[in-house]
Length: 114
Image 1: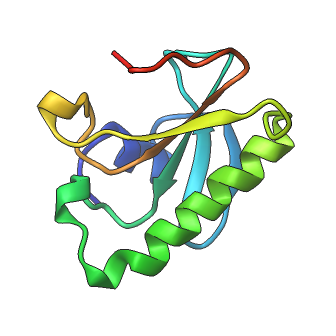
Image 2: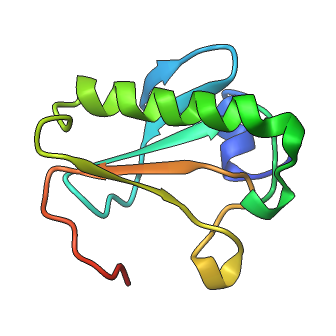
Image 3: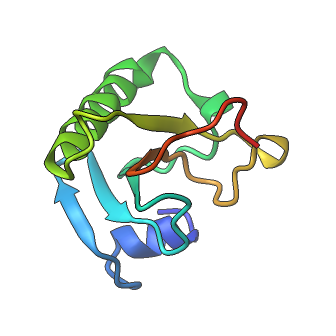
């Protein structure tokens, strides 16, 4: 496992509030939330960026999206709506080189995002 903060969370070396876990991913609460509800869907496979995804990752990315939808519903976001965000590399706002899907909700989202 790569030595990123997410790799350490997955290995149990750093504590995190896990709201969901299965064989392919975990969902945790973001420690610096940008909305009242801010969750991260993190795959157990250490893929550095969205640009590194290949055809072999289609099922994983689809699974992560379905998981995001299910946890958003569990968190009470389904009726009003929520935002899913993938950041890619520095200019895209990615801070940890391990892909993750942001689930943001509980407030009105603006467009365009910053």
